[in-house]
Amino acid sequence: MRQLAQAVEMSVAAIYHHFPDKNALYLEAVRFAFSYKEQVFAQVWESDCTAEEKLHGFIRSLIDVMLEDRDFHRLMQREILEADPERMELLAQGVFKEQFCLLMDLAAELAPEQDAHLLAASVIGLAKYYIEYQPLLKNFPGWKPEYDEPGVIAAHITELLLAGLKTKAA
Amino acid sequence: MRQLAQAVEMSVAAIYHHFPDKNALYLEAVRFAFSYKEQVFAQVWESDCTAEEKLHGFIRSLIDVMLEDRDFHRLMQREILEADPERMELLAQGVFKEQFCLLMDLAAELAPEQDAHLLAASVIGLAKYYIEYQPLLKNFPGWKPEYDEPGVIAAHITELLLAGLKTKAA
DNA sequence: TTTAACCTAACAAACGTTCAGTCGGTATAG
DNA sequence: CTATACCGACTGAACGTTTGTTAGGTTAAA
Image (spheres, chains in turn orange, blue, purple, brown):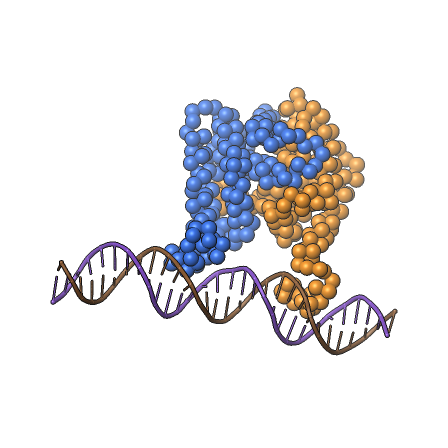
């Protein structure tokens, strides 16, 4: 709280004038950070291109958002790691649900006879992992500098998923 | 430290007799937790079955380990989220490297003309996500009780990956 | 005059850490 | 065999700092 007060050039007591306690302030901050990012994905869904291109666009946006703002990504990660069931439900309903549903619709369009829920989760899981574990993966053999580029990762994930979907569909 | 001392029925000072400071104790605990899990995967690699079956076995083991010991999983997650580059390298070299290399070899066997590093990362990323975000995913529409079963998740991931690999290879 | 916004200064609790000392065992010297 | 010195394991009590939080007072605008 003291560090925060210094950062916003206020006294600690002034912060307590605006927020009941530290937890409420933290929750508000999380809410704000999440809502701020949502508009990035909006233009992907609104664009009029094929379902395959939309998938690629979503994956690319996901990677971009997480890469450009690592603090945000760490905040999100921490929230999900630490949250109790009630807070988790709040997060799910209030923050992620809309994006997840849109992604599920897209998955259903791409592979109607498959499990949309599992597929949507796979998309996010793949994208998240590369960003999250990038510092770790760099220490393994076979790592190439091009893995730092969002485009390369997005292309790999999209190709892998699309290939998998088409084969299973056939 | 006081909580820990109470848990092991010792005084705080007794702990400081065995460890120089809190950080050293924490690191030792992490090392111990990691080394303990390694033997689970050994029998997967040693088994004499097809590469496809080995992939499925590895994914299944990964999910089992993470599900059966959520504290361990959270510890690992936290380490990777919080670690600085030097600690990250220590973790990579001392803990994960061997498993990752074995997985890369398997990926190279399954799809020789593809990027083994990216594929290995994809396997782990998919498996990790389902476990990590299970509490969140439960709040989304389309969730089914069977997603709680490790076998269902392992089968889905394996199928998705194998299908993707074969198509791209063709 | 009321009210929101803000301050300084302090509170109690929790934190990582250390200090001086106790205890049982074991090796060594007389 | 006994006295002594030393050892590692362990303790209670405290150290200084940081933590979240609040009481009480000041200021400027409505």
